[in-house]
Image (cartoon, rainbow, N blue to C red; front, side):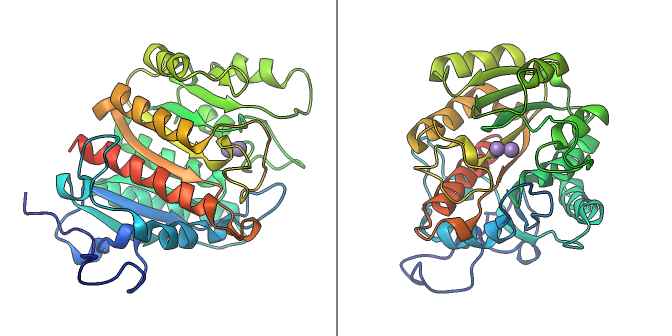
Length: 312
Ligand code: MN
Ligand code: MN
């Protein structure tokens, strides 16, 4: 392997200068081959409440300029261990969810076909459906580790089967996700009915609610349930609104950013090379003038990139 092309040198080009790519990394087209590709998916046509996650990828890139080369939580310099590059944005018709999802799936599949692992940046959570589908085309049915306030396994909303609250039921129906190897961590908030939790469990998921959350219990659940090849999805609303106010459907009583970082590190150690793809979604900048949500999103993406790079 040739020496990876890393981020712009901050001692030469200041962090606030230059055109924004994720972590000031090169674009995919500017390097020979890519181990880990960061792909934006600026689509929020699956949103059921407040929209705005279409601006997520740009805000995450803007917040990512402060990411430095060494990740002490994992003990790796991800941009030296692997060639990481920014693949730009996958976009399609912004008012046609089927066409938009196909554009995202196609972009991700193209990157995966070159041997790259893909880290997606949403976008509303519906973009995880084409992202995990592209990963499953390569690796077969995947277990899902989902960090989220919501199950996203409802059947329909206003009669629509494709939304950011229903896509994981679709992924189970199409055989992309194996619910018996899947876990959801951080669930909370009011529900439509008393049967919502039971219906989710009947699909096969193991769950750890935010109220029950405990780091060791979460890692133990991943160890027992999430076998085989795994896709990791981080809905930024797993964080408490105090840490991530800029999101489509905020719920009180969530994780702290510190808890989430520790959880990601633990999950990464547990999964190792079984992690085949990941995303961070639902960063909605219009609801967060402080930018802390996008900053959290950028750091989550950095950990996801580090996890994939560590196994290259
Ligand atoms: Mn959610
Ligand atoms: Mn979600």
